Image 1 (cartoon, rainbow, N blue to C red):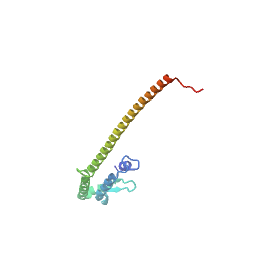
Image 2 (cartoon, rainbow, N blue to C red; image 1 turned 180 degrees about the vertical axis):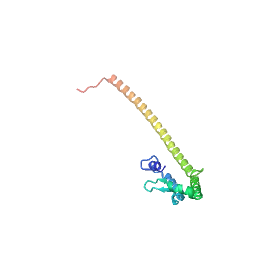
Image 3 (spheres, rainbow, N blue to C red; image 1 turned 45 degrees about the vertical axis):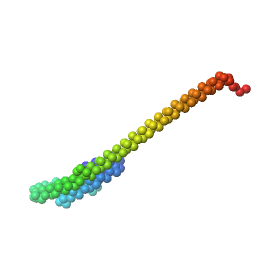
Image 4 (cartoon, rainbow, N blue to C red; image 1 turned 30 degrees about the vertical axis):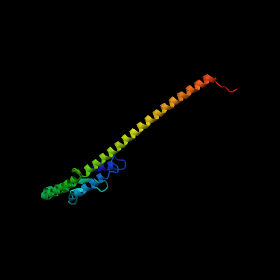
Length: 156
């Protein structure tokens, strides 16, 4: 998950500049603090990954199962409470999605307006071109009549 988030929110990622995901990731790390402080997980500061300390887990399962259960329950409650603010209606994610929907709608409206303006301009230019062709045809007709009436002038 961390590798995917880093890749997608990085410089050339599809979500580049979207810092909300990094905020969520950091918040989730904080919710796992009981696991870290009790040595059940290890945090790699170079890449942000976490790993399970199986030796410590096995020791707690055998010697302190109630402590392990309390730690896991605390982490579960922490994560649930933390993510609730993001996942509930009108939460962070819902608000962000609505914001993106509004931006998409606004951009689509601008595209539609621009297309209408372009189509209107194309029609105006077509009408002007037709008018110019008609004028040119009239001038050619007048020129042909003048030449027919007075004959073709040549320079000698």
